[in-house]
Image (cartoon, rainbow, N blue to C red; front, side, top):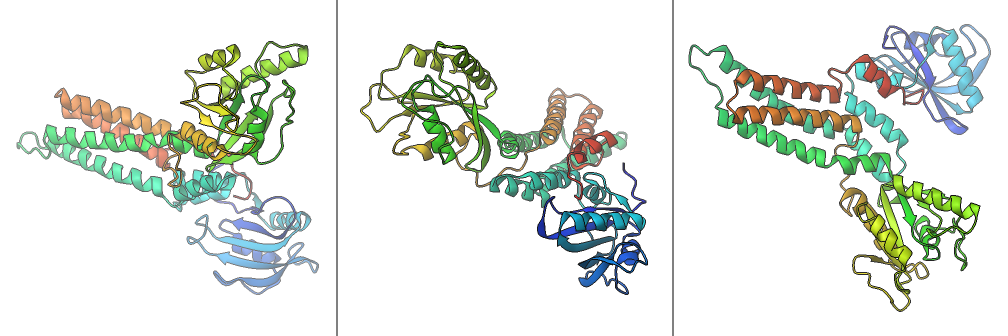
Amino acid sequence: MFSRDDTIVAIATAPGRAGLGIVRISGPDANTIAGRLLDCEQLEPRRATFTKVRTAPDASRSLDEVVATWFPEPRSYTGEHVVELSAHGSPVILESIVRAVIDAGARLARPGEFTLRAFLNGRIDLVQAEAVADLIASATPLQARVAFDQLQGTLTSRLSALDRTMLDLVARLEASLDFPDEGYHFIEPHETGEQLAVLIATLDAVLADGRRGRVIRDGATVVITGRPNVGKSSLFNALVGHDRAIVTSSAGTTRDLVTETIDIEGLAVRLTDTAGLRVARDAAEREGVSRSLRARDVADVLLVVVDRSEPLSCEDRELLNATAQRPRVIIANKCDLPPACEASDAVLVSTTTREGVGDVRRAVARALTGTESLHDGAAISNVRHVALLEQARAHLTHAHDAVTAAVPEEFVLADLHAARSCFDEVVGGRSSDEVLRHIFERFCIGK
């Protein structure tokens, strides 16, 4: 999978018809192979050339008119020779060009192989490579901004600063061990403990951002629950922005789960409307209630809806008690009517007038991330990164405890080296082939 000796080709634009489509060729023979098919003398570096691409080397028939651009190594996306052919965006044309390039000596690229080569050639680190996939998969502007920030190296920069501090500690501790007989001591134990404490606190700040970042990157599931006829489906429609769920004055209209993915304050939220919770009157309603309970169990946040214009029923109280230990937002619907129950800790909403719908959106964002404002994005959003940084923190904590207990410096050094190894794994300095394969398998072909 990691051979860089051959030349690869793939369509680099999304499937389907479009005005333009790009075929990317990368590898040591990219320019030579392209030259066998192009109806021009020679490509000039970084200069777009309008020409024609032939069906095969030395063939007289052309496939299409293209704009060909040659990016010599190392100043290309992959760090290798790259030729990009911009053709008309017909899938038939693009696939024919790919077949012609393969016949001329290239092979079809595997998923993520262009970005993998960029990583292996030192153009980007592993954090940036993963950010490429996240940027392509982003469904909200906030997801795109977080991925782009990581592609630009924001997380790498923060980790590099921490690693430099650890490297300085390692160097000074090792120097002290190298000259014990001469009496040189390059760092005092109290200074080591202070620097380790600062490292742990800084890493804690990065990890504290992790939950918010994971929600931004991966999205979340929010389930609307409540007894029949309190306005669950009306709230669902208000949040979705159109009449997706059926709403009538009859209780128990919703029998199955209704789900839509929506943007809430930049978060990709899978919003689910459920059947009203009550004693089922028939088999269909019984199955609907059962599905509602299962959906409630896997939700990241629950929207518990009550009718503020009526006293709380036994079903309302049972639901509030059952969800008391779950992340939730209590919604007091029908706030346009005279109140009949206390709603001090609830978000007041009228699905008739749309009053309070914006407050619900902000409350959901707060319940998912701990903040209503997500304009700053998040430095860390990948579960692999979080797991490795948590391991690094554990090593630093162990090192700090060792210093406090006056344990020999060799043991402190061992933990510092282990923490630095975790950092190396984040950016790809020590990642195994299995890890790399797992990461790049989720890329699309052509990227």
